Amino acid sequence: MSFWTHVNGAIRVDSTPLTNEEVKNLFKTCTFYGTEKEWLECNVPRGSEGSIEISIWFNPCEKDNRRMVITLFGDLRGYEESQHDDFISWLNKIIEDNTLWVRDGIMTLNEKVYRYDDELENFVLICREIDIC
Image 1: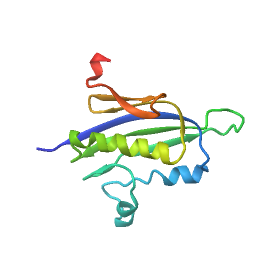
Image 2: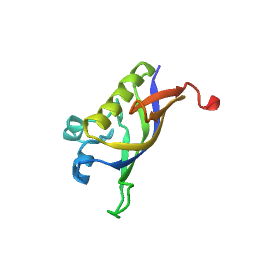
Image 3: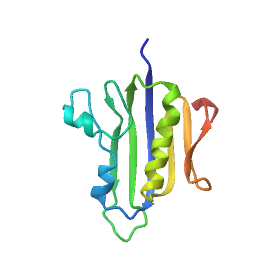
Image 4: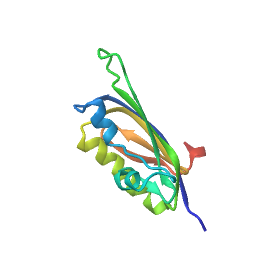
């Protein structure tokens, strides 16, 4: 049997002390056909066929309070449901350690929905199945 975790999420970040290049370095990905170096440098959740994909939109207007939007998506083979807490812990650590001021965020891992909680300043599970949200 093959286990998969399907990921889809978006995070709006209003500010951070990091430069755009420093933010990009937080999310090094790898693909099934990537080089050994890419796999060794990968620092995001990954399965046996590669990592999640990360796309970052940086706001070109410096006077706007919307700094960036980070999207996370992909299909992780060999990444079981028991590892979902590790995924969310990784994401919360990135936010906390790098002072990302998150305005809003939502993430699904299979049928589990996580939402950024302003009071806790972390992503938390809000429902187990998409159709009950």
